[in-house]
Length: 132
Image (cartoon, rainbow, N blue to C red; front, side):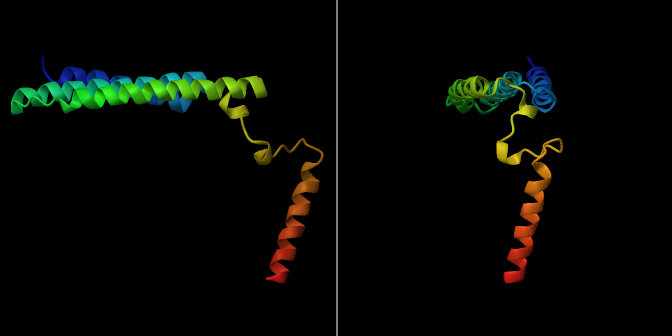
């Protein structure tokens, strides 16, 4: 088998995973897309390992060893990632990435206290500049 077949397949898998990471709003779907990207890398590692072992006649198979490490890291990542997503969903009630912002980053113009907070911050900044 040529090297081009698994390379093209892994490129398609990686592009699909990249699209999923960039376009999805659900945190679980983003984690699944990251797993798809890692599987594309694993396929590439094994394909190049087989191709290089045929040409160099080496028996080390370092690509397959790296693939095992990548699988272990992916398993840990998905375990920790799902635990974080479930904890956030339990606390906030949603897994939508756009809605998961820290309360200190919230700038809601409909909030009645928004103008008072921004005015207070600008006064403090002006006082800091005057004393400096």
